[in-house]
Image (tube, rainbow, N blue to C red; front, side):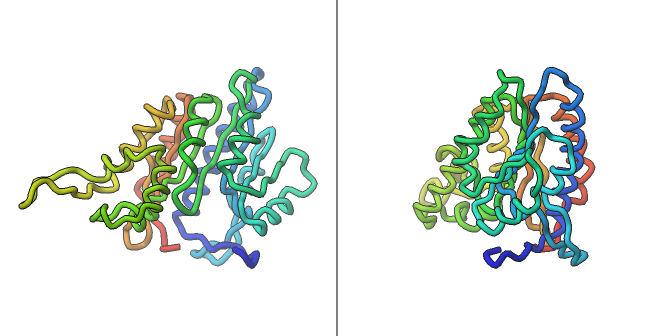
Length: 278
């Protein structure tokens, strides 16, 4: 939105926003009742302008920052690389002293400025939304959050970007720069083992592409075994009007109650998690 206009969003985005509203309401209510926890923040790594236009209705709707501001967190961290979006976020938060807007790369801002304020030993907690347009955030950020044990995340794995640019039928045709993008997102090159398997061919073994489910299962395993999140329920597949999966929405946490709430919310939307092609 270089011209400052609001983005149009499809039905799957509206479903994601409903999920965020339901979960953030439960999260802030529960944390607000725990006297030992004095600080529970909301973090939006790819915040956007705070408002969107619904393709279905043509009406302006709340984006994730506006939804979060309707809940009772002790502080709000909104991050966006785009100056127009950051300006709109500042307007959205005008008059509030519990909101910080950062204009910059969320990978750097999170590691250097936001996450240090959410340490477990300081009795601080946070709910973090990582909802990029492409293969982001860097694995270093995700793993750092997992090791902290104080931050729960919703993470958008943009599988359509991966399929269009990296996970090709012939991996030898993929550019080195695209493979490096995937390496940074995944944390190393082990994604290749999930995306391809050896199969016998006329002239010896050949690499055969697997499917979305195999890649997503491997990433879910990394969230648990490498990043160290204790609870990672099966992600929610968001599909466009042709039935193609655009992205998978992950939830990851160290809290059993949080996992149960997120799983119940996912299951409520699972059968209808389709979009309209935005």
